[in-house]
Length: 330
Length: 281
Image 1 (cartoon, chains in turn blue, brown):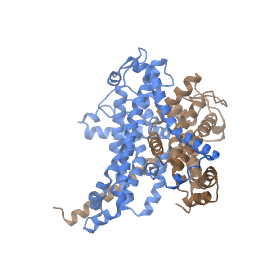
Image 2 (tube, each protein chain N blue to C red):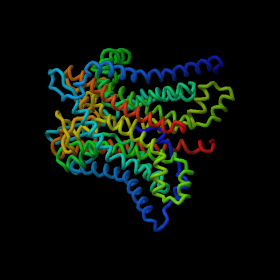
Image 3 (tube, helix red, strand yellow):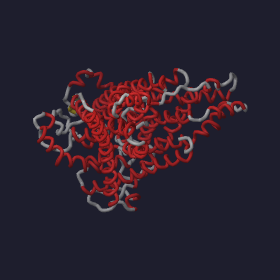
Image 4 (cartoon, rainbow over the protein chains, first blue to last red):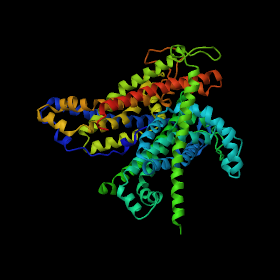
C-alpha cells in the first residue's frame, strides 16, 4: 500500500534541477545523466512488461472467443476448454461493493473525527495503529477471517440478519459463513486504512478560513463540517473511495480464503461465490494447457484494465481537489 | 425549523458517531494481533524455526525452509527492485522536471495500484514460461516489480527534501554534477531512503498472491534460485485452508513469525527515520 503523502504530493521540481544540467562535453556528467534516465525509464519498462505479458498469455483465448462472450458466459469448464468469466466478475463486484458500503462511512467518520473533532494528540496516537492495520499481510487477515470472522458470521451475524431482513433476497438461505459477506467484511477492514488516511490528507487541505467562517456565522461544529468542509473535500474523498475500491477489486488472499470458491451467481450475500483474483490464485499453478492459462490471464487482463482506469480516475480526482482553490487560499 | 437545542443534539450525536468509527476500526486490529500472538505462541519453539515441515499427524516439525525461502526470495527481489526503484526516484527528483518526468511519475503512481496477483501472472509469463519451471527467481522478479513504483515515488520525495542550498554550495565549489548527486544529495537523503527501502522490503515479505505460481512451494531446503522455493506466506495459506487442526495451529504460529519479521523491518525503518530525520519531521 502506498502512503497518502506519496499520492498527494505533486510538487513541481525547483529551478535548480534545470540549472544543474550538465555542461556540454563533460563526459562523466553525461554518463550520469544517461544512467539516471535509463533508471527512470525502468518504471516505463515495468508498465510495458505488464501489458505485453498479459496480452501475450491471453492471446490464445482472445483469438478463439470474443471478449464479450467471454465476459457474459458463466460456464467455466476446464475439461472442455470452455471459459466464461461472469461468476468471477459478479463475485468481485459484489464483495467490493459490500466492502465499500461498510468501510466508507466508517473511514470518513473516523477521518472527520481525527481531523475536525479530536484533539491533535489523539490523531498522532491513532496514526500508528492505522498504519499497522495497513501493514498486516493479507494472508494473515485471511487466516483470522477463516477462524474468527466466519464462525462469528455463521453463528451470530447471519442468523440475525436473516431474522431482521430476511424478506430481502440478499439475506436469505442457510448461514454458511464462507461467502460474499465474509469476503466483503474482510475487504472492508483491509481498505479502511487506505480510505481513512487519504481522507485525512484531503481534509487537511481544506482551508481553515472556511471552517472559521462557518463557525463565526453560528454553525455548530457538525454544521461547519457538513456545509463548509465536506463540500470542499468531496472530490478528494471520492478519489480516496475509488482508490479503496481499486484495492478491494484486486485483493487476493483474504478473499480467496473466505469467499467459498464456488463459481456460481447468487443474490444472497450468505452464499459462497468466487472472485477474479481468487480463481487466478487457485487455478493458475495447476492450469493445464495454453487455453486454461490463457483464460486465467484474460481474467487478469480484465482486472488490470479496470484497476488501471480506477487508479487513473482516482489520482486525477485527488490531484484536482489538491489544486484549484486550495492553492489560492493557502 | 430546528431549534438551537436540536442543532446541538445533532452535533453531539454526530461527534459520537464519528468517534465510534475509531472503535470499530481498531477492534479488528486488536483481535487480529491478540489471536495471532496467543494462538501462535503455543506452537512456537526453536524447532519451529529450524525444522522442515512434517506430514499431518506427525508431531514436531517447523517452517525453517519457508522462513529461509521468504528471506531468499525477498533478497532476490531487493537485489533487482531496490536499484531500479531508487534509481528511478533519483531520476524523477533530479531530472524529472519535464514532460517525461510527469509521465513517469504518473505511471509510477498508477502502477502502485496494480493488484499483486497481476504481477504474479506477469512474472509467470516472463520467467516461469521461459525457464519451464517454478523458481525462487520468478518469485523474486514478481516482488521486485511490485517494489519499483512505490520505491520510486518515496525516493523522489526524500531526495526533494534535501535543501537546495546544499547542492548549490557543492556545485559552486566546482564539484561536478554526478559527484554532487552522489556525495551530497544522495548522502544527505540516505537515511530516509533506507527507511523507504526497508518499508518496501517489509511489504514484499508479506506478499502471498504473486508467489503462488512463481516460486510455488517446496517441502525441503532449497538453495538454488532456479528451483521452486517455500515461502512463509504461501505456507500459511496452505496450512490455513487445509482441513487439519494440527496444520491450523501451525498456520497461526507461522503467521506470528511473519508478523514478527514484517514488524521488525517496519520498526527498524521507523527507528532509522526518527534518528536521521528527527529534527525535520
